[in-house]
Amino acid sequence: MDITIRRILLADATVLAQMSKKTFFDTFTGTCKEEDMQAFLEQFYNLEQVQKELSNLDDFCFFVEVNGEPIGYIRFMEDNSDFPEANEWKSLQLKRLYVLKEYHGKGIAQKLMGFFLAYAEQHQYQLVWLGVWEYNCRAQKFYTKYGFVNSGYTHDFPIANTPQTDFYFWKFLK
Ligand SMILES: CC(C)(COP(=O)(O)OP(=O)(O)OC[C@H]1O[C@@H](n2cnc3c(N)ncnc32)[C@H](O)[C@@H]1OP(=O)(O)O)[C@@H](O)C(=O)NCCC(=O)NCCS
Image 1 (tube, rainbow, N blue to C red):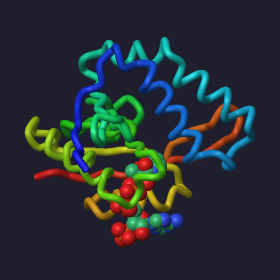
Image 2 (cartoon, rainbow, N blue to C red):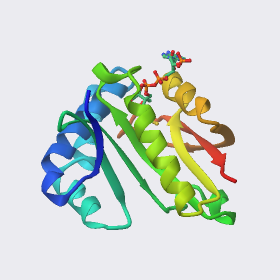
Image 3 (cartoon, rainbow, N blue to C red):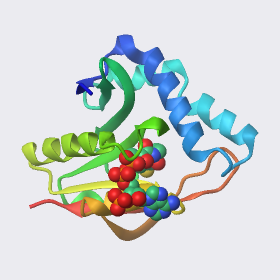
Image 4 (cartoon, helix red, strand yellow):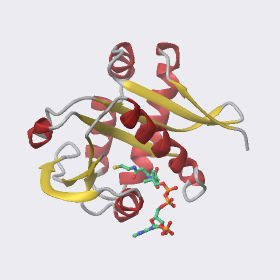
Protein backbone atom coordinates (compact mmCIF):
# COMPACT_ATOMS: atom_id res chain seq x y z
CA MET A 1 0.00 0.00 0.00
CA ASP A 2 1.28 3.46 -0.89
CA ILE A 3 0.16 5.56 2.10
CA THR A 4 0.52 9.33 1.98
CA ILE A 5 -0.69 12.27 4.03
CA ARG A 6 -1.49 15.58 2.38
CA ARG A 7 -3.11 18.85 3.34
CA ILE A 8 -6.76 19.10 2.31
CA LEU A 9 -7.37 21.95 -0.11
CA LEU A 10 -10.45 24.07 -0.60
CA ALA A 11 -10.98 22.21 -3.88
CA ASP A 12 -11.38 19.00 -1.82
CA ALA A 13 -14.28 20.39 0.21
CA THR A 14 -16.93 18.17 -1.37
CA VAL A 15 -14.87 15.02 -0.82
CA LEU A 16 -14.13 16.03 2.77
CA ALA A 17 -17.79 16.83 3.48
CA GLN A 18 -18.80 13.40 2.17
CA MET A 19 -16.10 11.60 4.12
CA SER A 20 -16.90 13.55 7.29
CA LYS A 21 -20.57 12.65 7.05
CA LYS A 22 -19.88 9.00 6.31
CA THR A 23 -17.34 8.47 9.07
CA PHE A 24 -19.38 10.37 11.67
CA PHE A 25 -22.49 8.42 10.72
CA ASP A 26 -20.66 5.07 10.84
CA THR A 27 -19.17 5.90 14.23
CA PHE A 28 -22.26 7.22 15.99
CA THR A 29 -25.26 5.66 14.26
CA GLY A 30 -27.44 3.93 16.83
CA THR A 31 -26.28 6.21 19.63
CA CYS A 32 -28.89 8.86 18.87
CA LYS A 33 -32.19 9.30 17.07
CA GLU A 34 -31.86 9.15 13.28
CA GLU A 35 -33.40 12.62 12.93
CA ASP A 36 -30.79 13.98 15.35
CA MET A 37 -28.02 12.35 13.34
CA GLN A 38 -29.27 13.91 10.12
CA ALA A 39 -29.62 17.34 11.75
CA PHE A 40 -26.08 17.13 13.13
CA LEU A 41 -24.58 16.06 9.80
CA GLU A 42 -26.31 18.91 8.03
CA GLN A 43 -25.33 21.49 10.63
CA PHE A 44 -21.64 20.62 10.96
CA TYR A 45 -20.69 18.97 7.68
CA ASN A 46 -22.54 21.03 5.10
CA LEU A 47 -20.40 22.20 2.21
CA GLU A 48 -20.37 25.84 3.24
CA GLN A 49 -19.17 24.99 6.75
CA VAL A 50 -16.47 22.68 5.44
CA GLN A 51 -15.31 25.34 2.97
CA LYS A 52 -15.15 27.87 5.79
CA GLU A 53 -12.95 25.58 7.87
CA LEU A 54 -10.66 24.79 4.93
CA SER A 55 -10.29 28.51 4.19
CA ASN A 56 -8.79 29.09 7.63
CA LEU A 57 -5.07 28.44 7.28
CA ASP A 58 -4.76 28.01 11.07
CA ASP A 59 -7.18 25.07 10.83
CA PHE A 60 -5.12 22.06 9.75
CA CYS A 61 -6.91 19.31 7.81
CA PHE A 62 -5.08 16.42 6.21
CA PHE A 63 -6.19 13.37 4.26
CA VAL A 64 -4.49 10.05 4.57
CA GLU A 65 -4.58 8.40 1.17
CA VAL A 66 -3.94 4.92 -0.12
CA ASN A 67 -2.84 4.89 -3.72
CA GLY A 68 -4.13 8.46 -4.04
CA GLU A 69 -7.62 7.73 -2.58
CA PRO A 70 -8.60 9.44 0.70
CA ILE A 71 -9.45 6.88 3.39
CA GLY A 72 -9.35 9.05 6.48
CA TYR A 73 -8.61 12.51 7.76
CA ILE A 74 -7.31 14.48 10.69
CA ARG A 75 -8.10 18.01 11.80
CA PHE A 76 -6.19 19.95 14.43
CA MET A 77 -5.65 23.52 15.51
CA GLU A 78 -4.49 25.69 18.38
CA ASP A 79 -7.75 26.24 20.20
CA ASN A 80 -8.53 26.14 23.90
CA SER A 81 -11.96 27.68 23.75
CA ASP A 82 -13.68 24.35 24.49
CA PHE A 83 -11.28 23.55 27.26
CA PRO A 84 -10.05 26.66 29.09
CA GLU A 85 -8.16 24.46 31.56
CA ALA A 86 -5.61 23.95 28.76
CA ASN A 87 -4.80 27.68 28.69
CA GLU A 88 -1.87 27.33 31.01
CA TRP A 89 0.15 25.53 28.35
CA LYS A 90 0.85 26.03 24.67
CA SER A 91 -1.68 23.50 23.51
CA LEU A 92 -2.96 21.95 20.34
CA GLN A 93 -6.38 20.38 19.95
CA LEU A 94 -6.90 17.23 17.96
CA LYS A 95 -10.34 18.13 16.67
CA ARG A 96 -11.07 15.11 14.50
CA LEU A 97 -9.48 11.80 13.61
CA TYR A 98 -11.58 9.56 11.41
CA VAL A 99 -10.63 6.57 9.28
CA LEU A 100 -13.02 4.62 7.06
CA LYS A 101 -14.09 1.51 8.96
CA GLU A 102 -12.57 -0.92 6.41
CA TYR A 103 -9.18 0.51 7.41
CA HIS A 104 -9.51 0.29 11.18
CA GLY A 105 -6.84 -1.83 12.82
CA LYS A 106 -4.56 -1.54 9.78
CA GLY A 107 -2.06 1.06 10.93
CA ILE A 108 -3.67 3.96 9.06
CA ALA A 109 -4.75 5.85 12.18
CA GLN A 110 -1.22 5.39 13.53
CA LYS A 111 0.17 7.29 10.54
CA LEU A 112 -2.17 10.18 11.25
CA MET A 113 -1.40 10.19 14.96
CA GLY A 114 2.33 10.05 14.28
CA PHE A 115 1.97 12.98 11.91
CA PHE A 116 -0.01 14.97 14.48
CA LEU A 117 2.43 14.33 17.33
CA ALA A 118 5.42 15.18 15.12
CA TYR A 119 3.73 18.46 14.18
CA ALA A 120 3.07 19.24 17.85
CA GLU A 121 6.68 18.54 18.82
CA GLN A 122 8.14 20.50 15.90
CA HIS A 123 6.04 23.49 16.92
CA GLN A 124 6.95 23.23 20.61
CA TYR A 125 3.47 22.49 21.91
CA GLN A 126 3.41 21.49 25.57
CA LEU A 127 0.01 19.84 25.58
CA VAL A 128 -2.14 17.99 23.06
CA TRP A 129 -5.75 17.31 23.90
CA LEU A 130 -9.03 16.04 22.46
CA GLY A 131 -12.63 15.21 23.29
CA VAL A 132 -13.80 11.61 22.98
CA TRP A 133 -17.29 10.22 23.61
CA GLU A 134 -17.47 8.49 26.97
CA TYR A 135 -18.55 5.20 25.33
CA ASN A 136 -16.17 5.28 22.35
CA CYS A 137 -13.98 2.59 23.87
CA ARG A 138 -12.04 1.82 20.71
CA ALA A 139 -10.94 5.42 20.26
CA GLN A 140 -10.10 5.75 23.96
CA LYS A 141 -7.95 2.64 23.78
CA PHE A 142 -6.24 3.99 20.68
CA TYR A 143 -5.43 7.32 22.37
CA THR A 144 -4.23 5.55 25.50
CA LYS A 145 -1.70 3.63 23.41
CA TYR A 146 -0.14 7.02 22.60
CA GLY A 147 0.05 8.18 26.19
CA PHE A 148 -3.14 10.23 26.34
CA VAL A 149 -4.90 10.06 29.69
CA ASN A 150 -8.32 11.12 30.87
CA SER A 151 -7.94 14.66 32.22
CA GLY A 152 -10.98 14.24 34.47
CA TYR A 153 -12.76 17.06 32.66
CA THR A 154 -15.84 16.42 30.54
CA HIS A 155 -18.07 18.42 28.28
CA ASP A 156 -21.48 18.11 26.66
CA PHE A 157 -21.39 17.04 23.04
CA PRO A 158 -25.04 16.70 22.03
CA ILE A 159 -25.96 15.19 18.68
CA ALA A 160 -28.79 17.63 18.02
CA ASN A 161 -31.34 16.76 20.74
CA THR A 162 -29.55 13.63 21.96
CA PRO A 163 -27.35 14.51 24.95
CA GLN A 164 -23.88 12.96 24.94
CA THR A 165 -20.80 13.51 27.07
CA ASP A 166 -17.19 13.65 25.93
CA PHE A 167 -14.16 13.00 28.09
CA TYR A 168 -11.26 15.34 27.58
CA PHE A 169 -8.08 13.33 27.10
CA TRP A 170 -4.70 15.02 27.19
CA LYS A 171 -1.03 14.30 26.82
CA PHE A 172 1.82 16.47 28.02
CA LEU A 173 4.81 16.73 25.72
CA LYS A 174 8.41 17.19 26.83
C1 LIG B 1 -10.41 5.73 16.53
C2 LIG B 1 -9.63 5.23 15.31
C3 LIG B 1 -8.96 6.40 14.61
C4 LIG B 1 -8.52 4.28 15.83
O1 LIG B 1 -7.89 3.66 14.75
P1 LIG B 1 -7.78 2.06 14.69
O2 LIG B 1 -7.00 1.69 13.49
O3 LIG B 1 -9.15 1.52 14.82
O4 LIG B 1 -6.95 1.80 16.04
P2 LIG B 1 -6.17 0.50 16.55
O5 LIG B 1 -6.80 -0.74 15.97
O6 LIG B 1 -4.73 0.73 16.35
O7 LIG B 1 -6.42 0.60 18.11
C5 LIG B 1 -7.67 0.36 18.66
C6 LIG B 1 -7.51 -0.50 19.91
O8 LIG B 1 -8.79 -0.62 20.52
C7 LIG B 1 -9.08 -2.00 20.69
N1 LIG B 1 -10.52 -2.13 20.60
C8 LIG B 1 -11.28 -2.41 19.53
N2 LIG B 1 -12.56 -2.39 19.87
C9 LIG B 1 -12.62 -2.07 21.19
C10 LIG B 1 -13.65 -1.91 22.12
N3 LIG B 1 -14.93 -2.06 21.78
N4 LIG B 1 -13.33 -1.59 23.39
C11 LIG B 1 -12.05 -1.43 23.77
N5 LIG B 1 -11.01 -1.57 22.93
C12 LIG B 1 -11.30 -1.89 21.65
C13 LIG B 1 -8.30 -2.71 19.60
O9 LIG B 1 -8.08 -4.06 19.90
C14 LIG B 1 -7.01 -1.89 19.61
O10 LIG B 1 -6.18 -2.23 20.69
P3 LIG B 1 -4.86 -3.15 20.46
O11 LIG B 1 -3.97 -2.42 19.49
O12 LIG B 1 -4.26 -3.27 21.82
O13 LIG B 1 -5.37 -4.46 19.90
C15 LIG B 1 -10.54 4.46 14.32
O14 LIG B 1 -11.08 3.32 14.94
C16 LIG B 1 -11.67 5.32 13.80
O15 LIG B 1 -11.51 6.06 12.83
N6 LIG B 1 -12.86 5.18 14.44
C17 LIG B 1 -14.05 5.91 14.02
C18 LIG B 1 -13.91 7.39 14.28
C19 LIG B 1 -13.59 7.72 15.71
O16 LIG B 1 -14.09 7.11 16.64
N7 LIG B 1 -12.73 8.72 15.85
C20 LIG B 1 -12.34 9.21 17.13
C21 LIG B 1 -13.26 10.30 17.55
S1 LIG B 1 -12.72 10.96 19.11
